[in-house]
Amino acid sequence: MTTGEESGVARPDALPAEAPVVHRNLRVRVGARELTTLTHDHLNYWLSLLRYVRGGPFMTVARADDGRGAFIQVYRDSDTDYALEVHSGAAGAGYLAATLHDVQEVGQLIWDWLENDRQRLDAIPWKQHPLP
Image (cartoon, rainbow, N blue to C red; front, side, top):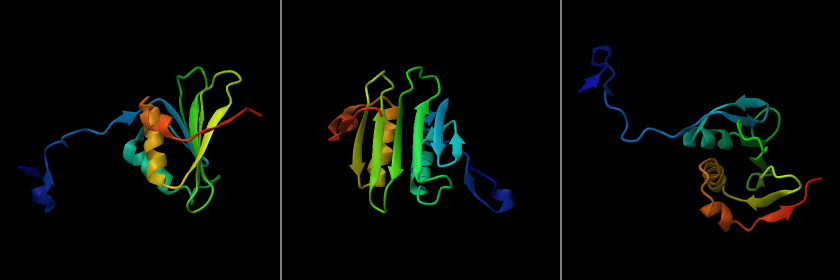
């Protein structure tokens, strides 16, 4: 059964098999724009627009309720280079950085960070940087 047939547009009346995961209560900054929620699709959408965003080609994602100040961010250096950084928020810990060349991989790593899934993150050849 579908709804909307009376308007000439057939739409299924069933929900998708799996509802998307939504991360809420975030502090997301994409250039000059600030967001509070992300789905996997929205994350990839914003990453695809980094070259066009007002305020710079970067995206920062943090949990608003994280008292440590941990966050992950990406800066689009060129058409093919994405500088990804992971900041733990621990005092004096510095941060981890890597340059990646695939925006889909960047999106998956940011999503893994949101999901607290370290498997792919731990496989990246990170460089440790001290805080300035």
